[in-house]
Length: 139
Image (cartoon, rainbow, N blue to C red; front, side, top):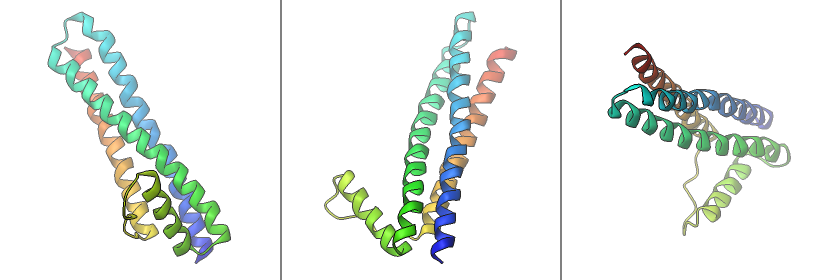
């Protein structure tokens, strides 16, 4: 079980690293849209592009945090039991986020499912930003 949890954490760290690419595209597409803004693009299109880029930036930061946490968790699980490592992670998050009570204990599978939602969100933001850029170019 311990080896499976370590590998699951390593795979999750890789998934988080891969999820940053759609965010990077969404931010780059916004920059391309801003460059085109001087060519008579509607302000609403520019605002939508900027909002999508800000959301992509937030998701990229969350994915990077998750990547670092899952990578550290994989290393920690080599020395301790998975449940103990997750408990220590929750305690550390509680201290870092200045919470009076530590966050509730979540299973590793729940954490990975949450990470997959963030990666899906990154892909949707990249797709939406691509549509905005497509509209701007074809106008």
